[in-house]
Length: 542
Image 1 (cartoon, rainbow, N blue to C red):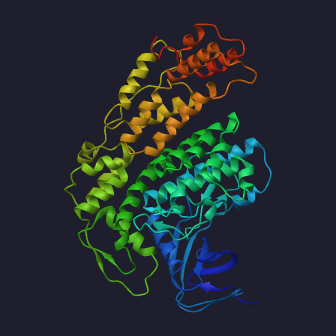
Image 2: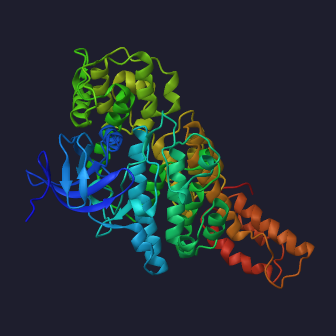
Image 3: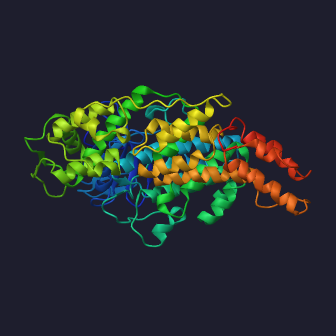
C-alpha cells in the first residue's frame, strides 16, 4: 500500500476539490489538527491567497494555520506537483455547499430561514474581510458551506454558513480584478470600473434572491432589474429578507448597505442570542485587522519589526510574519514604525471618515494599539470620538429610551430621538434602536428621513438607502399604484387614496383617513392602513 504523501508535519488524506488555483486535500497535522491543505499546481498560485488570510486573521471563515513551499516534488495518486509550488493549511470547515442545497425542493419557510442563515454567516465573513482591506471576489453558492445545524448564538464558532475560497481575493488598494463568476458580477465590474467591497455585496444579494425565489436559481442569467421584480412578489413572511436582497442589488455601489448591517439584521431575524464576549473579541480583532491591513505592504517572510515597535503592535506583526508564505527570494528588510499618514489610515479604517480630520496621536504605535484595545472594551470603534482617543476612555452613550407604542408621552420621546439623530455624530445605539422600531412599524415613518441623514453623516450611505427603501416599501403596501380591480376612478376615490398615502407619510394620523367618507371599495384599504400605523397616532401634525 502506497503511504500517504506528507508535507512537513502534514499528512494528506484525501483530495476534496480543485480549481484554477490549486488542489485541496483534507489533511492531518502531527498534533492531530485537521485542516484543508491547498497546494498550487505550479509556482505561487496559493501564496497570494495565504497572504490574504494572514492579513485577515479570519474568525468567521477558515483561518490560516501554516504556509510554505514544496521543497521537493510531491507525488500523489492524481499526479505530481512541482517543487517550489506554494501551499497553505487552513482550519477545516464541515458542511455542504449551498448550491447543492438549492437544487433540493423546500418550503417557503425553510427558504426564508436558509436565506437569513446565509445572510448572517456570509455577512460576518465579508465584514471581516472588507475591514481588513480585502475583497473576496467570488461570492457564489458553490463557495458557501452550510453547517450541519443552524446557529443559536451570534458567535463565530456557532455560525451556520461559511464563505470559503479566497482564490480570487484582492487587496482593495490594488484595484484590480483577478477574475470571477460572470453570473454574479456587479454592474460596475461589467462596465470596467475598479472593483470594491460593494461588488461582493451585490453578489451576496443575488445569492439571497436565488434562495428566496427558486425560479431565479434556475434562470440562465441574472440582472438587478429582474431580481428586484421577483423580490417584490415575495410574501409577507419573507418581505424583510427580500428588502435586504433588493438593497444589495442596487445598481449604484454606494447604495448597498454594508455586510455588517446585513449580518446584524439577519441575527435579529434569527433571534440569535447575543454573546458579549464574542462582541468584545470582534472589536479587538477589528483593531488588529485594521493595523495589519495598513502594514500589509511591509509584511514578508524574513522581515523584522523595528526595535521602536513594541506592545500589541509588535505581537501582531510577529504573528503575521510567522504564517505568511516565504517569497522566492529571502527578505531581511526592517519594518519601520508607522508614519503620520499610515497612523491616520489605521484610525480612519476603524472610526470612519470623521476621524480624517483628527490630529495624529503623539504616542508610538505600541501604546496607541493598547489604547485602542482599551477603548474597544468600552464601545465599538465607530462610536469613538477624539476626546475618547485622547483620554483613553469612552463616556457612556446617551440613552434614548424606545417609546412604548400608544404611551401618552410617545410624541415627546420621538422628539428626543429626532434630536439625537440630528447630532453631528449620532450615537450608534440610537441608530440601531430607531432602525428596529421602524422595521416593526412602531416608529413614525417620517423618522426614516432623519435616520437616513444621520447614517449619511456617519458615512453609511448604503444603510441610509436601505432605510429609505424600507419606508417606500411600507408606503406602497398601503398606497398601491393601481386601483383595486373593479373600482371606478372617481374624484372621491382619488381623494381617499391621497388621504391614505398622506396618513402613512405623516406617521399614521388615522383620523385624517377617517374624516370624509371612504367609498365602499376603497374602504377595503382602511383595516390594512390601521394595522400599518397602529400606535403612531400623535406623531404628526393635527
